[in-house]
Amino acid sequence: MTLVAPLGLIGLIALGGLLLLYLLKARFRDQVVGSIYLWQQVRRDLAVHEPWQRPRFSLLLLIQAAILVLLALGLARPALLSAGTPPEFAVLVLDSSASMRAADVAPDRFAAARDLARDRVRELSDGSRFTVILAGTAPRVLVAETDDRAAVLEALASADGTDGSGDMAAALRMAVALARGHSAGTVHVFSDGAYAPPAIETGAVPVRSTSVGGRATNRGIVAIDARAEPSNQRRIQLFVRVRNYDAGPARAIVALRTGEQILDSRTLLLDPEADATATFTDLPPEATIFEARLLDGDVLASDDRAWIAIDRREPTQILLVTAGNVFLEKILGLLPGAESYRVLPRRLGSIDIDAYDIIAYDGTTPDVLPRRPLFIVNPQDGVFLSISGYDPRPAGLVGQGEDPLLRFVDLRDVRVSRVARVTPPPWARVVATAEGSPAILAGEYEGRRTVVFLFDVRNSTLPLAASFPILMSNVVGYLEPPATIAAPLVRPGQAIDVALRSETQAIRIESGSGVVWSGSPRGLKETINAPSRVGLYQLVQAAGTRVLGVDALAVNLADPEESDPRPRAGTLESAGQRPDLPPASFELTFAAIVAVCGLLLLEWWWFHRRA
Image (cartoon, rainbow, N blue to C red; front, side, top):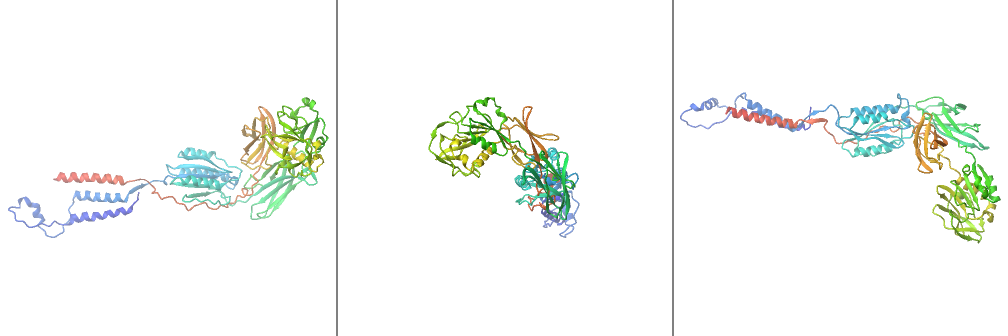
């Protein structure tokens, strides 16, 4: 029990006044009477003339003293203490970044932090409300503002760590904002502190930090890359960078594998807090997937392996539909990474157009265009493009802006003799003009990339220009199917852009254990999130039960900050204090008032009973 307002006990001074009333002797004025038969008590009082008298036992005295004591206690506000702390609005932030997978705490830091968070939920008093935030690549709310303790414990038990980078600053900003809206809001952080100290203004919101793990050391693969050898563009050399996170020197053995075959290994001597690079050459020309692995284990397994997928795509297949254009035939046949085939317009019906990546039309334009990237030279009037006439005056080509088709292209000396007059359609942008009229158009026509030359290259000086091969290489590079996965190196949880086939109805990410993610595309481009764990995955495109394509998806940690398991954030304890609340379950003031009323009734009854 405690007293909320102990100064109220000053009221006990009234007990002295009550006792004084019973000690004072009454003073009487002399009066002559005929008989004192009816004044026996007065006679006894007159026996002694001192002003004080010995107090006599009186039930009324006890009742009145008890009333005064209860009134003083009522002013002091007695209260019964509860067994725990007052209810609060607790925002729990659980760090799920890659460093929390370190195994210096069994089984790992994340599991230990999760158990500590569950213990904290059990410790808080009844009536508390909870919000749980998982601090990963982006903060994610697992449970929002609930007093269902079982649901909170279940959400924490099902939470899992990731191999991705953590954004603790964003998670703390969210947590403080949520706690600030409650008078008893408190932020509880469970982390290893292996991140840069965030600059967060907590204000009056208390932040309580619980740390897991220690000053563990680690060696990790922080980068992997592959490039063509300078002497032979068809051969690949691979680079692996390893960092030592120890204050002393260390040794690391890096093995390079493809499938189950070990190709080579390197022993690296690492200086304290320094990097070293291993270079691998003479790689098998048919291999497309390589894995680098540190053979000596350490506390963090996520950065001991890294994968890379080499894009060894087949040559781009180009079908040229023409009655005869030696310039286009020659230039398309000379482009590296491309194979061109020529067909007469009248023989086009016997060709499987779907077997080609790019369809080029010279001097002809069919009414129904194939669902393939298109390169149209000297188009004819039709449904695809409305031509109002031709400008026969010779004119020079002028590039428009920094268009990617004109990269490293100089058109200043190129002249054309005749250009079709057209109004640029909504889908096209003007790449080059001749005397102010459009001469080269590019854009996406009904979902497929298209480039249009509004002139005949045979009646121009373009084939004689030094920039002609560069321009045609840019055109083919723009039209050829893009790589399925835009980012060559993917980190856990990273948003990646995926280029899909036109027939694709479903996409899924698979690992050796099964399907990790699946979805339905809404177009030829889709943005998806990479898996949250490092590893080698497959991105599968399908139409019904038919698999259209399979691409390797290598997900690596490759983050020097997350590979460092040592605490850097320090303590997150804030100076913020919420208003002090008495740790009491309920006050006894009302009970004291009820008791006073009861004693007053007893005093009244006892006094009138004697009368």
